[in-house]
Image 1: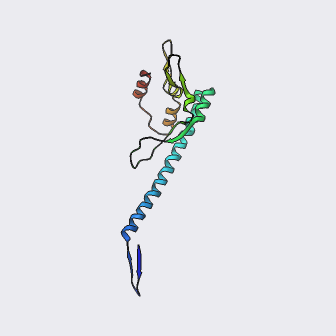
Image 2: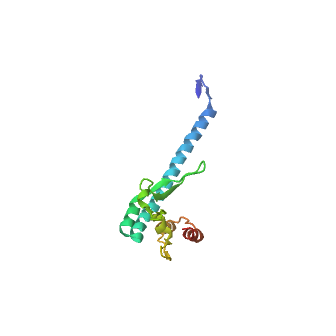
Image 3: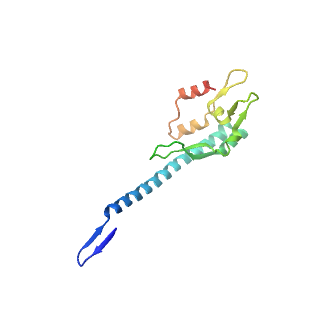
Length: 154
């Protein structure tokens, strides 16, 4: 942008570039505001999920799950979108993997959240500590059909 001053005139050139730069700054600031709002909303869900893990699951496992829950970015976002989720910290995820004698790997928080089958037959009911926190906070959890399909596939 250049400005030329004369006795009673002022001429500004490069306004198009200035306008583009201002729009870019507005976008950056808007993104910051949106990201902050999304993170603040997820903090509420995180606190509820941690409380539910401690109270509903209980014991040592409930405390371990509660301490491992974190807010993290959602993978595979579309351009122009921003999403966060409450999930187990990936650096602590291996603590929650159970390997059976037959070599099958089970992820314990998923088995707790959605229920699982017993070795001798029957099922262990779900303790949906994360789904309930989502419902309390007005988020839309997966439908019951998705929940039932998850149990059937185990």
